[in-house]
Every structure is written in structure tokens, then in C-alpha cells.
Amino acid sequence: MERILIATDGSRSAREAVELGLELASEHDARVYVVHVVPAADVAPWSAFGMSAGAPHVETPADRGPIDDAIARAEERGIKVTGELLTGNAVDEIVAYADSRDVDLIVMGSRGHGAVARALLGSVSLGVMRETRRPVLIVRAAHVPAHV
Image 1: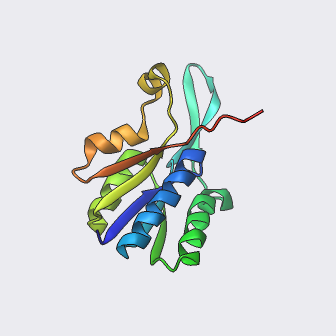
Image 2: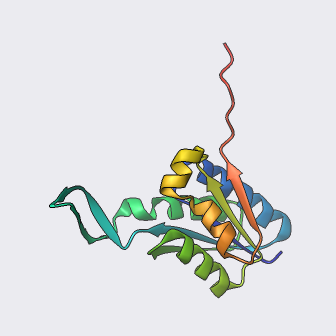
């Protein structure tokens, strides 16, 4: 394994996916690509006459936060890393980026939405699995119960 793509959104499961992806990269002396995808447009939570309003997404420092965090963790371990902020549909952008870098593995988190939420909202991790020909490792956030 020479190239690993880690897709992150900063969620708990994504942070765990970053850690696991970096462990794999360290074990295999692999190059890491870290991506975060933001929407092309921000949709307003209100609508007029049944139509939603939207405006082009303007990049903010918060958009780069998940990438910067993953890059810092990789550099602490001496891992070769490149970070990219992508814009568009998350599934399409992740799959296209993986293809453009010819990665050997895509690592990403899963928020673990229930069946209803997944049916209504879709799932980026499942969408990537359906659309790519590359291996995908999906990491779910570990739930560790508190001890009393």
C-alpha cells in the first residue's frame, strides 16, 4: 500500500478514521491524502413560495479545520501528507480525488445514522462504497460506556 486517502469532516468517527488511516500509513510507509468536502452552495433554512434560497459557499477557516488537524497529526508521525479542501457533492468529489491520485485505500468515518436518516439523507460512506472501485475502510466511532 503506497497511497491512502482519508476523507474527514471533523466528526468523532472521522477523527478516529484519521487516526486509523495514519496508523496504516505509518505501518506501510504510505503517502496520505486528506480531504474535506464542502458544499458548492449553502442553502438557507427557510424558503419563500416553496423555493429554498441558496448562496455560493464561501470558504471559512472552519472548513480547513479538519484538514489542518489531520495534517498536524500526520506530520507529528513523520508521514508524507497532502491536504485538499474540495467543493461539491461529497461522494463524487471523494471518488474523483481517489481516482486522480490512484490511491490504494479510502479511509473514512461513518456517523452511524439510523436506517430512516440514511434513507432520507443518504450516507456519504455508503455512497463512496457504491461509486468507487477502490477498497474503502469505514470507521465507526467507538462507544465506550462510562464506568460508575
